[in-house]
Amino acid sequence: MSLHDRVESLKVKHAALETAIESEVRRPNPDNAQIHDLKRKKLKIKDELSRIGTGAH
Image 1 (tube, rainbow, N blue to C red):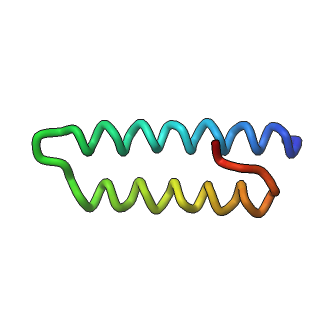
Image 2 (cartoon, one colour; image 1 turned 120 degrees about the horizontal axis):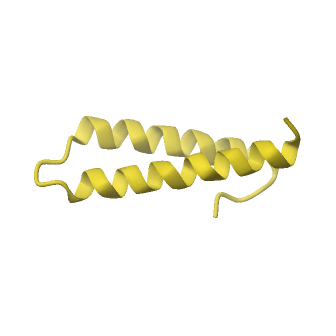
């Protein structure tokens, strides 16, 4: 996998996690543990993108 492919894959995962977080927050009884886990995963991806030298936009 090329660096570009890796970055694109991470950006897709980052966006999917953001969508999952928003969906969970909007539920009538959001699962705070699930939200925390999703945010942790999203931050890990953002950190990896930063190490590679690109933003997570």
